[in-house]
Length: 410
Image 1 (cartoon, helix red, strand yellow):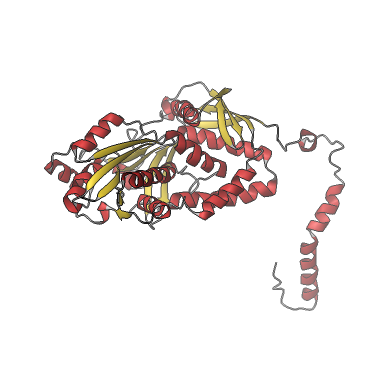
Image 2 (image 1 turned 120 degrees about the vertical axis):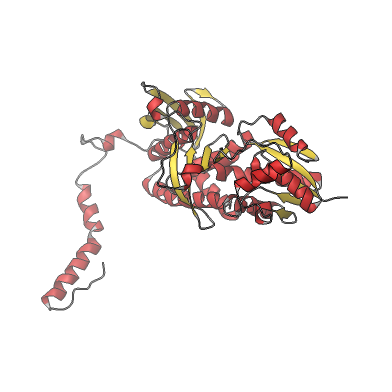
């Protein structure tokens, strides 16, 4: 009996040629697992394509709700953004896909899993770290690290020589990844960071120049840090994100052009469209500013950076990420309320923030003096705060009188 290999299959150029390559080089049965994370593909069509290219079985896993609820929203609560801009759309999808792939492999009695990630990118780490964390007994096959194919053109040649139907062409220069959270673009004119992206590169969001001339107002409601309603209507995680994607996209919101540091040490350039995610993160931050005290908010900003790194590096299935989630969930207990945003030609303005757990007190923040704050108290506070500075100044003055060096550490 031949070995069974479960391939994470998308129907794109790479995975289309991997099925026959695995059969030719490993003599194995290939089970194609198609993960639906909201990429908008015609799943029956992708299934038929996998079968035509040699898959003995196709398994379609609908991961949309799990993806948004258990991966995207925890990252939102964490405030995870990589290198100031990237909302981690591809990074967050990989662990949920890898987890489903492992489950299919164990269920089908497969001995190996395979992926179509290149040896230059982050995704190989994300998939393979997840495989090792969840089922270390499974063999991992990474064709891009084994075969002689070096480029997209080589891959197209391989497909054409075997009459494999592909949608990629020599003129279609961009590599794209889409799910419910984002759409990414790489390659083509983007390979040179000196080039501006072509207008045709953007596929989802309307150009801010062509967006409506009237501001659109949207209200997002949160419970314990996670969005639960849009404009007063409660929705499932996927429906809510879909609604905000539509609203953000038609107003030109969510475009990012980024030169980033890959985990493998290469700098790369990509463009990302995250319309709904931009609205959610903007609103969530505003609600945190209202509901978290200063020290907790500031400490959590450092945690957010670490969380973003873990996600980007493919270290989702780690004790550290789980421990950080416990901390983050604790911080989000009172992050409940509504935020109203005004959208206009790519801009997002905060119009209103409301929470039953707001720490903002008008009687204290107001310029009008009241009983809640006695200005005289500030004098003692500042005197105590300045004690170390006064001590340093006193010592410096004494040394200067003696004509000694003044190299006093501050």
